[in-house]
Image 1 (tube, rainbow, N blue to C red):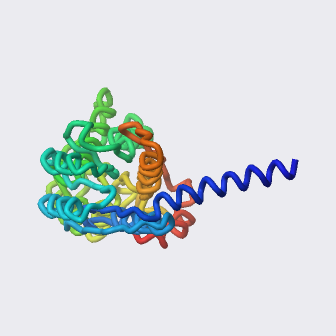
Image 2 (cartoon, rainbow, N blue to C red):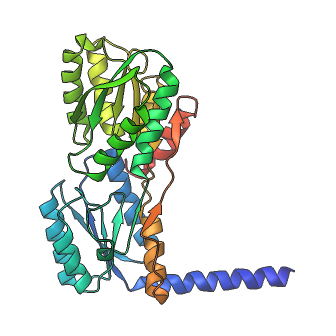
Length: 320
């Protein structure tokens, strides 16, 4: 029995070595959106770690939230003859031409955490959460927290035209249907940033009787929620109590706010999109295995009852 276990372990080790050797001479281009949020920074950190662990040469481009910069980066990667491209698209539209160029160069493209409105044959696969489901989970929590009480909701939307902004809004609003006591009364983009989240929340507070007419805030990401928390405190209200706060991503600072009772819930978006993406590329390079067109990650709800202080400690070193 021991011999069998040793043999199986040796086979597994050889298989891992073969995969590592296969990947070791590969070059990957990573066209990242930018660093608009703590989650985005963590995704970059984890992607670089995943590439290093596999012996890959990762060439990184920060688009600073501009699609034209991402398109230029992809064309540069194609010119360099990279073996694959990871793309976290800043918006959903306008990718057909450059993705076609990558296809003609026989360079597989894997989408990370966001979708594009392009033909599926222009990319190998997409790794991400079900963004509509994230909005649904956030809404279900709020419905349970509020019950039958009237609740006026303000919404901080993500970057206009991005798939998370579109889908997280859709999931949230669809789930509220039939619950007429909950109404989204104001909705505006905060562009996924803390600064814009704070600024837009300040305008919401001014428009809603100093915030006294606001029951809850739904933010499309945690960073906007963290900015909004500051605005709420400066307005003399208690975030998490006077105004319920639910958001999406699961970044350390939101867990810190939850541990201090200044936020109520977050729906986790794992920053490790690269792991499944590189697994899919490894299999594709090895024997041409085609992955499914969408590889879904989990969308887990965390509340104040889920050890937010511990979650903060566990996540704070990931580059958020």
